[in-house]
Image 1 (cartoon, helix red, strand yellow):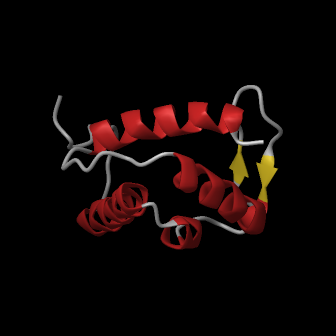
Image 2 (image 1 turned 90 degrees about the horizontal axis):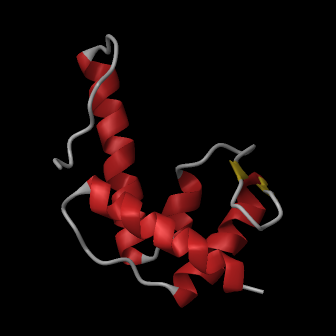
Length: 99
């Protein structure tokens, strides 16, 4: 599987570039365990919903959650967003053991 997204629908080149830039920053944050960069990509009203856990509401709580997560799990560096997304699922499962 390629690391490139499948674009469904019409997107202007500028929109694709903006989305690709956000995705690259997300990959960087996950690979480097950087909760600050990851938080800064989010809107103030972010909701993080993971099965078996309370909903995380807002940037501040999201940041705290990511700090805990990144302290317990290290993502494997990869050029493929697909692999980073797989690591994210593994990291999210680790949240079950954060408390």
